Image 1 (tube, helix red, strand yellow):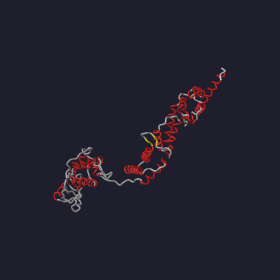
Image 2 (cartoon, helix red, strand yellow):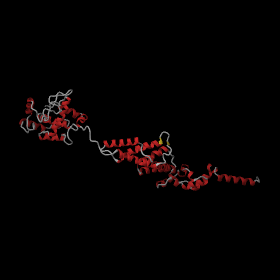
Image 3 (cartoon, helix red, strand yellow):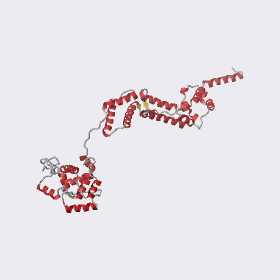
Image 4 (cartoon, helix red, strand yellow):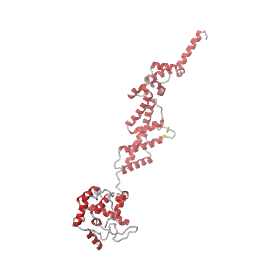
Length: 406
């Protein structure tokens, strides 16, 4: 069988040494020479003309799995039998033999791992003057031949087709299916999700949500050799967010009644909200709730949220940035001024908003207590206090007495 079309993409066939040794082998034309592995090409041609089968015939069965001589509808004729691989290589000149090996080595999954002939391997054979195929090459060729008979193609042309179209080759020589990878049992994953939900929301996950979670984790496990803890955590957080969205109306930015009163998530929401309030940062419920969900990853994630709030306070009140860096919040730092404001304006300490105290630390240094008292006595708020009104009344009575009125 003569090779119709072959390519040499790696340019290993044109060496001077290979040509010289090929010519020498032609002249010798001995068994065991470069041209054959114990039989000449003419021997195989003569045997073919006589109808002598090379190799085990399996009582007339062919490489295509059919009885010899069977015409395949839409394909070729079942003729080639076991041993066709050795026979195909034996009738080729050494350079054509090397070219065939090169192209077969380019076909994905045709050989077992590590057995495909590569340019370096073939180049060394050419340099040595002997291109000797292996039993693995014979078997690989017979895989090609089986396809060719069903497709109605010349095997050597099929080699070129597959070598130039790796994706097509993978369809026939790749693994059609693989043993399923081990995955975590659905019961274990559901229990894991329910434990997390009970901790965060004080309720188990809805069956539909749990089923979707199990399906996504198992799908990832079946596709990957290994699934990291971080990957699983990311998926878990996504389903926590879904549950959180049920408790939080993202369109109206309002909480479902009692949504933040239960579980670890509720405690985290309240803690972050308090951090905003104690540092005088405007509160956005939607933002606080999302930050609470994100902070569930770890203690470090929660700390990052609180540190971000403190950083905002440092920007608004730079006079206290060193104290903020020590971990103090704005309400703690402003305590002396807050107490002064409460006494002068006659209002409870817990009703004083930190956001009303920005001016105390907005400069490079804080306003002194004495200066702050002066500001408060001049403020409109002070004139509304009972102390101011009593003093005004006393002053009026004193004035009236001075003029003998009343």
